[in-house]
Amino acid sequence: MKHSEFHAAIREAFGSLGPSLAADLVLDGLGERTAEQALADGVAPQLVWDALCRTAELPEEKRFPHRAERRRGTE
Image 1: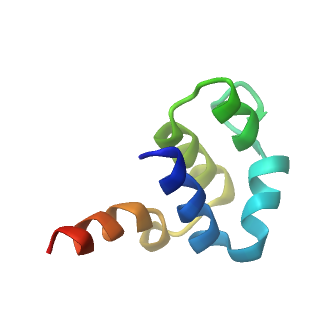
Image 2: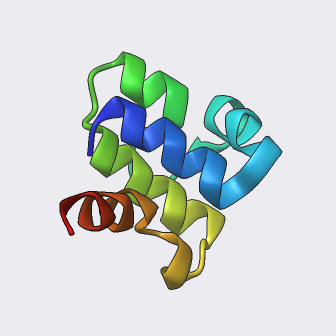
């Protein structure tokens, strides 16, 4: 996952709340950092996304929009 895919996925999964979640929600498993802090510290976007999905209890069907976009682009 690229940084741009992370930001697109968070907007798609959480709508207008996405940026606030990235800035304010402390994520389990990432040293008690927010998504923005973890990304700024160099944590891979996929690891941040996975932690955000777990912490926010995002349903499985909404967890992989970046992969669906890639598949559509290769068809």
